[in-house]
Image (tube, rainbow, N blue to C red):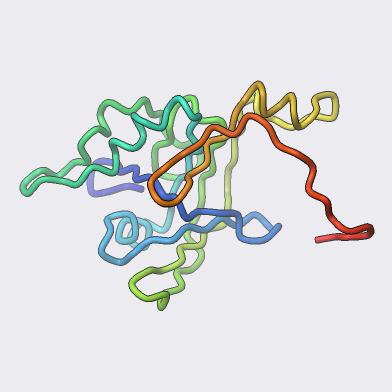
Length: 170
């Protein structure tokens, strides 16, 4: 998100697609800069880092010191400008979303759900699902990063088909 004359990136572990119609959401609190920035600017970006980027991206969550206006670690993070909204995204992320804030749903204790409409999306060619590449091969080539509560992460390099009942549809 834009924050004054600069930008701020902050890792979010409770983030997900919101249905099948081009919306994305994440959980945040009004006390966080991301909440204030997104509501003031009306936009946010999402970068899906690769597992080998987890250390450098987690540095952006370091608390700010009094009198310091920027996020520690952000200047070390390789970023590029967003293409459709005023923001930045993580360079070499395997998926990037640019969103216009559509609504904020408060009332989950101290948390709120921030929902945006995806206005631009880019995926690394190696991570793109294609009919000639199996899901297993795709995961071997481009592992997914997953947050495991509390405080752990994993690189997902293999998976199995889910045993949906016959005739099951979304």
